[in-house]
Length: 283
Length: 321
Ligand SMILES: Nc1ncnc2c1ncn2[C@@H]1O[C@H](COP(=O)(O)OP(=O)(O)O)[C@@H](O)[C@H]1O
Ligand SMILES: [Mg+2]
Image (cartoon, each protein chain N blue to C red):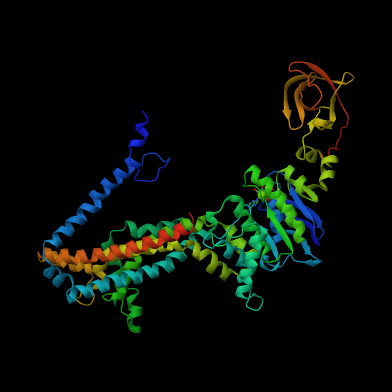
């Protein structure tokens, strides 16, 4: 029966890896259930409210300030995490020292800790009367109840993303590449800047994107340390909750919609940059 | 001239090298030959400055370089797994050693580019400069690694199992090509291998290593024909060890009615240009391998024949580790 082999339409490249149909179908179903259906509900809901109403709430002065704060602090925190997460990953991969396992476990703690606990702890530390806050306050540095405080909370929450993204790549990088650079006369600094850093940049990028995404959506730890002053330290997720508490479902939906679109655009861009890069390396 | 004097290296308690002495003349192509774990890579890395000896000295042209860091020794090193910079184009990989130089010694951009082009031609990869290492075959990557090492005009070229990861055909082509390149460019090179055929075919002199010691240094002819130890005799070429302590190469046996040892023939097959006869000595059951000239009639399986040795060696037990 020769028609058996030719009947199937070729809408994907032939591959010897089995199970594409099954796994792809399952992935799609799963994604739909978990991600696509809830998100499209959001879409439909906001479509139903009319354009003018959508713009009035979604782009109100208060909402714009909240977006700026949310995305600004998330980006700042992701940058801080990129730098210090890389440092932590470096230390964990490159050096052997007593207590290494403990430190490694500590890195994951922000994943597991209820975010409210983190928020309360950080607030206690950084409040003007707190352990750390009491020394910063006389210097005129206010952390709790300011955007700095929000950033601190997001740094805490996002650290594991960077460390765990970079760590395996760094471990995998191989000493021989560094040794090759050394035999060719490169200094330690040149080797880092031109060989190691570019090699781990994609992983760092991923970690940055994950930490950023987590920061944008973070709620639990931030609401305690931010002080929640509308127009000053009110993050967008909080604004959404506030709208819900006032039974303003349309308002909540509109703000959520704007946040989702911006987040998606940012993450999509980061992903696209990554895959362009990967294709270029022929990997 | 490169001189390695009394080099000893331990990893923890494990002695990887003991008292290595070696002299290499300019223009020589030297093979470090030995089984896995014999210390070849460690010796090569010490010469390069990637590893540090516990005792002994390394001299380049009479200067003790033991305290000179790897980047200042001006050695080209080709790593076993190539260690190419994957995020750089082939041309950038090759130019790397020139671009990291201090401004004072760094050639102009155009000159670096020309150098890279020239080296691409030398390693027969013209037109592939803008590719990434991930887009090349194993043999091509190997040549990029070589070009990158040659770019700094090394006084000494070190290659760690340069053909280890390649398939048989590519391997053969590449090693002949490397041999020619070495001559043309007037390089001084040391390469590591565990493949005796490779060492005998390529090297001017072969350094046979075992358990962190040098068993013999000599021309391919010398290490094959006059092995200094039982180990060399067995590692370089094939050797039968008879119960009476004689070491005899398969082609040094002849099957003759006047022979002194009786052998039961277990198997006969073609091996290269001759017959290979596998059998057992009737008295001790020792397995022996015998080569019979291709145009002679081989014995039949199951037959008992008598053999004689045209040439045999014995080694003092000191050398017979
Ligand atoms: N960094 C190291 N730490 C501990 N042991 C090592 C190290 N490098 C090599 N060795 C040991 O030293 C011996 C010689 O290794 P090597 O020089 O790599 O041998 P070869 O290249 O001949 O296979 C081996 O037994 C190996 O396990
Ligand atoms: Mg080795």
